[in-house]
Length: 347
Length: 204
Image (cartoon, rainbow over all chains, first blue to last red; front, side, top):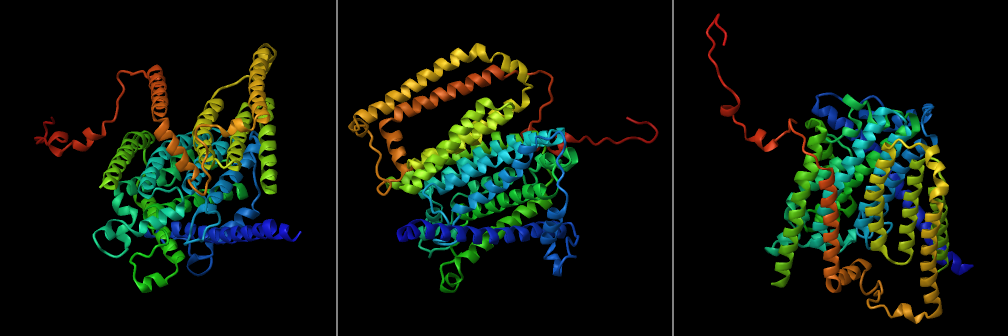
């Protein structure tokens, strides 16, 4: 009985505790990310944004949460009830499940698996199901059109995201996310004799891939300017049209969890994760999680600025960009990176 | 070991149950969704055997790409369920035959490993222990050294299949206005705008 406790029960309790802690922190972070998104958008357009609930509108997201939860859920009579309710669950579960392998600091990860980056890639490629199921089960024109667009868009941009990840993996030589971050301790900067700094991170040596990844991440998470699945000028709200109350909130939550995941992934792959920008004592003293959050927030700020600045793409231009520009470019970069690595490894 | 057995039975039971639902579900879209559940549980089974790379590739390729296209096609098709059901008995013998062949093959494989357990150990490329070489690296070792030609040939076969599909569906329609972005970008005021001095009361 004692061994049962120490081998199974205690690790399970620890893991559940860690997961709950991460989940709560993540949800609070998402609430403020949502607020930040609206505030930044408002600031660019010289508006105030939400400023009524709490000081500077800080509690706006929680007020929205309460509103969504207490509203009446409406299920269209023609909808396929089971799939209709399953779709938000699928999208939010998948979006949150990916966070299990994201290292927020050295050894701060729930599941440090060997194929971490593949796991993230696999689960984020499943996220399209939440959208397709929502669109189909609503049994209505606009949601279905939105779902079709979204599926095509996500499948297309996943290809170039895959190639970007391959180049990073070639440089690192491991699929483990912690290894990917630690590999960025040395790079261009240390090669010319500087101490370990932000010049070593992958964003500099793989700069074109950094840009491709950023834009593909926008498309993959259906952010503006690629928000065609929910283009309100043509499809009202795309696949979310028929949803109300808590299921709608879960779809939104899944979407923002996926956006935050892409920010975290960009931080890990290209911005050195929890590593401080320069290797000096007072910056090393700051905990790694702070650096991680700062970098992820900066990437999210860029996401929000793109949303405010750039007009929406036309659908054929979106497909052209994905298949005719990003795919060949990332493929060529994979080949170039492999050649350079082979040549430098031989010397 | 106990926990692994629990998860094996969980994944295996859900996989078999949803495989049954694939053929018994009334709605074809539900069938495809159950098929996705089967794939998902198969990935779980792969994980239990230590084939982590294959499990993730199963998720990425089969669920993330192939099943999405499958779902697309099934959603778009207007399928008459009654008509589909009426032909069931007609195709039953063919299905039964394929099922029998698969069952016989499974019996042969399992029977072989039960009768002589050493046979399984005599494989040419033994799987290294995860502590020595990770699963992904071990697969790469085998694929890109011993079987590199087969690997390339299978890639070529897929390429030919892809080109074939494109050739079959490609039709170039005439008189369609297409956007040529490089042409648009290369336009200058000199080529795009003509400044005309119009005399009052005359027009152009």
